Length: 265
Length: 312
Ligand SMILES: Nc1ncnc2c1ncn2[C@@H]1O[C@H](COP(=O)(O)OP(=O)(O)OP(=O)(O)O)[C@@H](O)[C@H]1O
Ligand SMILES: [Mg+2]
Image (cartoon, rainbow over the protein chains, first blue to last red):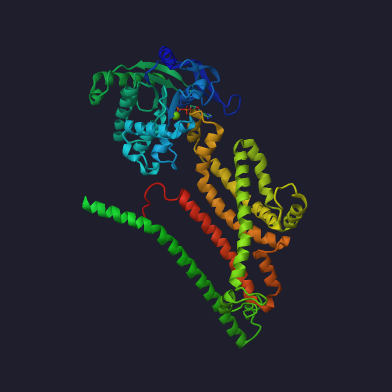
């Protein structure tokens, strides 16, 4: 039964937004048109980045997909169901700019948090968190507390926590925004490794054109006031290696995204 | 490598010793502080009597400041001696009598404290559910503290005697005193608890939402742990307040058996043994320090130590 479910999911879009718009504080003096007329399809297993100037509604779009806020108009479907049904089914997981680990829990117990909420047995949780620590290469730090980790390590724990229950969709809001360039590149490789190992669908918000082009299969360029999608740049660079960063195709797509961003103004 | 192992062993040893050293140091500091107080007290007496010898009716000591004669300020040695003396009509040293009464008051305070924590935290949790409820109720919580304790104490004792028949156990007067202590305790717990329960960052609350966590799960796994540091600073205030509430409650409600009663009694027969009133008051102070220290060490065990190595 779960098999047919799985194959049905494969044919469904991971995210499907039709005519989505969001107005904050509707009808009040501080009304904000955050998003208008969003149409967006994201297929299973895609890695999509959202890029655009500050305030163009990237985080808002991600929160709509996560059903943390409601659309003012339009529909958002995740794996073929309403976004809120997907939330209640735990179809997705989020990673924020700040790792947001619970400082009173050690690394392992932080990773177990979503599993606890789902009522997993302790032994199963323990085993899964060990697997996850291996995935993000932090096995030695299971019993450390977040304050004892560097920023990059904390963010890796946050990713492990998000992936712990094998969600189908990973929503990441500038997860590497607070990291230095070296750590950031390292984390990009780690994320791509995890993505290719698990074939999870990723929606990734970033401010960096280079990061967007290096990571994703599709770059969604957004423009502000009101927030909308200005262009979608297909970004098929094949398997990423260090050499990708010197690839002419990589530079060509960076230029394409940059121009799309300019056109939006 | 060998050297590193040696260092590691030494660090482990130091860590073990650290706790003991800290406690020891606190006790020494407290002892020194008490000695210093005694010294200042004696100095004041010496100064006062020296002035009295030269000219009586000196305008500061004796008229503005309290007089320093042995009735008003019994000598330190009398006070220390009084601790071990058996008061007339008893065959028990005074420290033992005061100790038992302190235990009686401690029971009232502890029960009152526990009830205050439950009530205070309960109110804080209810208020966390809605901003409107918080805005509506917090002013009333604050207003509750403006009612003078001494005024409500007798009422509560009378209620206790008359109307708690439905309880499975017999209501006793000390329980009414606990209610009075509760009245002082719940307030700091509610106010700090509310701040603590609201302290998680929005993204951590969103994280729980994204996992479709139920309200109770968010409370238990995020809001309550995040509020522990806030709660413990409230508990420390509340614990000392519960002792104050118990003593004042005993005095104003006329409940026998505790330190409040002792203070009242020794004040009444002050001229026959002024040092005993001083000892009773010191006993009350010691009780306050004791409950504060007890809460502090629970806090240390629960929320101390974690995290980054502290660089001193
Ligand atoms: N909860 C909210 N209430 C009111 N307005 C909001 C809220 N969240 C976002 N907005 C508004 O919506 C617009 C889009 O915000 P959003 O956070 O989605 O931008 P962003 O693209 O993520 O920006 P950044 O790159 O700086 O993170 C902004 O104008 C912001 O002021
Ligand atoms: Mg944002």
